Image 1 (cartoon, protein in one colour):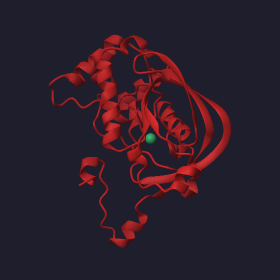
Image 2 (image 1 turned 135 degrees about the vertical axis):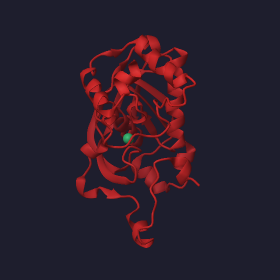
Image 3 (image 1 turned 180 degrees about the vertical axis):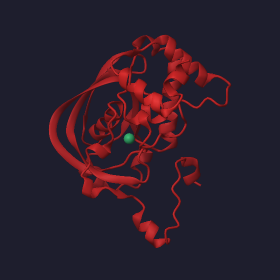
Image 4 (image 1 turned 90 degrees about the horizontal axis):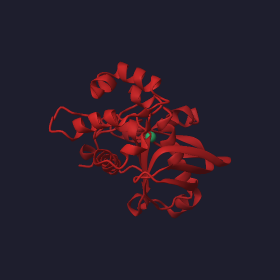
Length: 243
Ligand SMILES: [Zn+2]
């Protein structure tokens, strides 16, 4: 069974992710997994509604390419919607398949007015933050157009509670299949380029930890921890921390 074979435990999952890196995922296998996801079995977990954390092997394998033929299926579209919903639940700029337990080459990004609320104009200007419409990238290929390294702080839902300064290329072109299976190329600069490089890295099994300026890595709540005598709770489920 696909799920048992791929996801039965973290060890087998890591192995399969590694050896399958160059193959397309078959329609049959994608359907088996998705049917479980869509089924009524409440024990079905993948794709998760939470975000996997660093240490989970699914975050360190190279994701499998999606067979273009399955993109238009209702099952795959449901996964795309689910990925987008989880991203929004976490109020994140982007989220990739591996982060919800699916080692597939897919990610979604967006930057809304809501994201930009409360961000100072000077920061928006310095980091070239701009609105990004919700965009799905399937089987993406990334080409760096301008290698100039731009360093700003970034975080990752899979490294919850921490942040670090990470150098990223200033401008990239990314070619991928969209949500209808059509190929498109997207040019991104500044903040948008940072987001897609971050998400693209997830599909290669890379995390920002691999590229960060190590000395800048820190717990985002260190000040709050001192102020509250250590009594700070870190949740891995957003509906809890939003209360
Ligand atoms: Zn991330």
